[in-house]
Image (tube, rainbow, N blue to C red; front, top):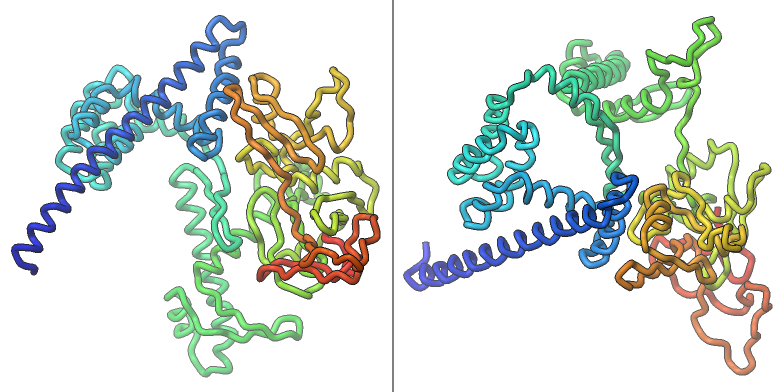
Length: 491
């Protein structure tokens, strides 16, 4: 409840909150206008170029990369924000005016811009006028559906026509999460998405029903009881006998649905395979393709000596058990020999013939070497830091992985790079900002806890620490080999 003093204190807080809100709005509007100006600058730089579209894209990439260092984000993110800011400033003047006047907030602006893209340009002014009026009376989360209905009524084209165009943008993408998990996001027509979920749900229930019915004989329950339990989504642990072995399956319906989804995508063959011959010889090429991932795991983790995380190159850590399972099914391995003190990759070999230098660089880089980029090396291109055309050698000290996007930035903008020993890249932006890009840290590294005394051995001089020196204490979860070269190198 509170007394008069509390009410007075609350009034002061509310006044302060209003001031903070006004200040935040002003900063947000200024940021949008700065980013929109960056887009206009890219347009200006590309003016007069023979290939105007490509020139604008390269100019925009260079500017986005420059600003990314200031905003501490990736250049891809900055380029997207530049496009959004320019679209907002140029195509939604009524919305910008209402925002600057404090009639609406940033959340309203996002909804108007998101839904407004569905409305043709010639109808957008009317849409903005009505949308701003609706936003003034509701919170952003409540007004979204009302604006969608407004856009549908204003749009001169039928929903069917627009759906056919939208379906052309269907895609699948991965969004990395915490604890070795990720979200696999598929953008599909609604009826297809609902159909997929329905089929997965019915298949998951069949799995749960089957395991429940297998337990009925021993428990004395009826099959109807088992099905009733399964349909609830969570069941007790059921002991099942399979090939003479016993295991416990207590998965929920969500877990079974996710497992069936994974199994179908990793091992199933598409129903429509244009590469199939139809002569009864089995699946076509599509059905034979298997997933390909790059995983780095230390030898000690691989042998079960510790449970340190492995690295899914360019993505995120994965658990030791999954890494061991993948290793057990691998047809070939890359073995990395790392420096015992610095951890730098010194050499790489394989149990089958391959391009040793490519393997070495892929193991060293593990991702695109442009500042902030996380594209895995297996999807990148090898770039000569010093071009061959000007005498650059084809050797590890002059090569680095760059994704297609940043390979183009290096060659078509004023960004410059030089490579130092150990695979360290030093990038210089067009305005002179310097960014150091070190190779990703190794999974296994040695360190000396105490400097050698006057009478202590000085080491063998071959890149290995002397066996009389104790390895440094390591943080929990980090793997290491024993002193000297006794432990195997990481894989």
